[in-house]
Image (cartoon, rainbow, N blue to C red; front, side, top):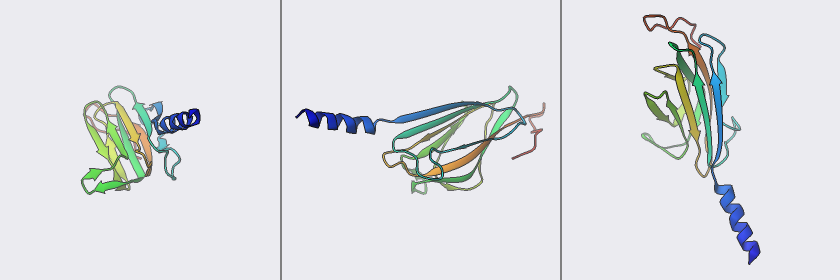
Length: 145
């Protein structure tokens, strides 16, 4: 009877979410930062949360471009449990499906990217983040990616 209890605990522990967080300071107009889903280009772990928190200098913005983005999509308008959410504290966008060259621009000098998988951990992606200097008119003064 005791053995059954151990097996149940092991199964419950395996079902718990895993999480990874990274904090990245981008230099405006500096070197791009490449980030990928865990195990890219293979499948990520099940029930996994992966977060990147980007910041750059005040008065600058952040641009994220995903060259390879493949997450399972339930329908044309609905995601499964596997999603990537881009947020800058002002606006937020949840994304899934297949996209190449997908770009998100922050409205300020902060952006968080949150990737979560469900019980089957399907999908992967590769993106690049870069800080962008803005002039006094709100125009980008750095070379695009």
